[in-house]
Image (tube, rainbow, N blue to C red):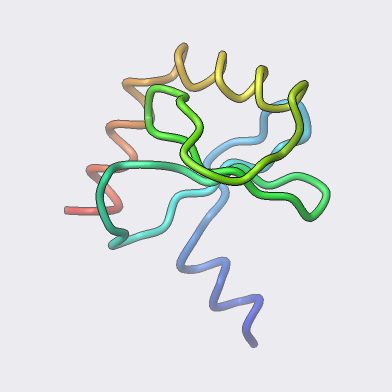
Length: 83
């Protein structure tokens, strides 16, 4: 039951180099997304700056590059999920 609830609240919006990218609905500011890989989690702002946590340096670099390339997509998702 909990796994279903977590999926509804935080759907995967992308997968980058095996890292699942999530965004909560009705979440707190500042705008951000969660990256999860192998039980580790890191939170990034929408420009790809790490806020907290760690998914490892190699994965972090790939997620940061993706976020920079997809900043507009991330902003639109944030606005959709957090009206």
